[in-house]
Length: 449
View (cartoon, rainbow, N blue to C red):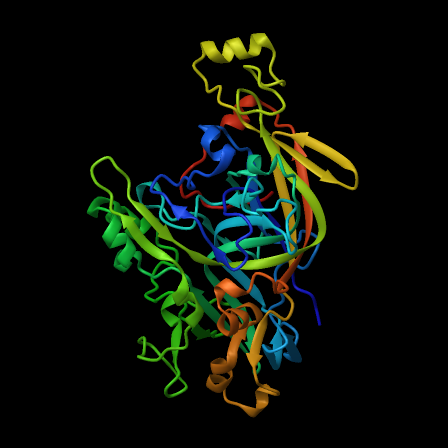
């Protein structure tokens, strides 16, 4: 089977070691909840980290339009949870990455893996942010594109954990595949679309915020669907993606594709257990206290490494508690003061692998992802024995199969459905102004040259 490999260069906000579900309280200003030494002392410290997702540069220029044929496969999740069917490699993948988390497939060095070892790499929580934005951005993995983010690797400085896994909290997942000699797509939203009907939003936020969210938190423009709906579209030809209006629900009562959401659609039941609640509505200048979880896709890394960070200077820094970063002379720092420019601490990253440690203020993490055999036709032996609709009724993914059989809160110990080679680059930025460049809300990933 041809291996579909995809490159990610990942760096920004997420919650630590939450293998099945992107957790964490969503604040209206996009900041994660305070926890531990790092969060309480971070203040306005600056990250200089980037994320780019797409195809491996030296591989095929995109996913194959006609992937390998479905082949028989067995899923052995536990001694009692098993599955036999057909596995198929998707032809293309796009997703909304709300956050990215470095984690481990084994017990972390710390007795409490959630304390001090977090390695969030993308997004500001997993929900609604300041001014109606939803954390994260849309990435089409068919081409490499990048986005500057923010991290909390300072929380890993004390424990210096070893990472060999990645979680991507997804707002939706969209895949193309070939079935019965025809090109199809599957789209699964994990945030109700459109967002203005979401009960948490209506309960916690005022009308002005909701009006902003109508456009700023719209993950899939033109889509009307519920969390976990499994929508399908048959392409007119292999190279032309479906319009959103062409997607259909599968009515499980009649095993037919329908244009309006039926009473019994094909849907992921496990996502109904996601925590989405308004604890305290916003009042006046007091922001609301809300939580809006979305599920995570999990990747095993083919190599292990240590990655952590420290503040460049100031009281929170373990390595340089002085009043200025080591890279700046007294004259440069005084000039920056005179110009009224920011003097907040910024992140100094440390990367350890093969006995060597490199450090710098700029971080890039590259993941080459293998999604081979990710699609799963549960219980089928031959697609030629069933109709297209009957095949779609059995279609899921290896990951979704685990969620449905075991629940989102029970899959953390399972083997990830995707694998990835990882390359970490830590370097020194050319200028201090590069480090202090402000992040732009709701930025769109840009093509990598």
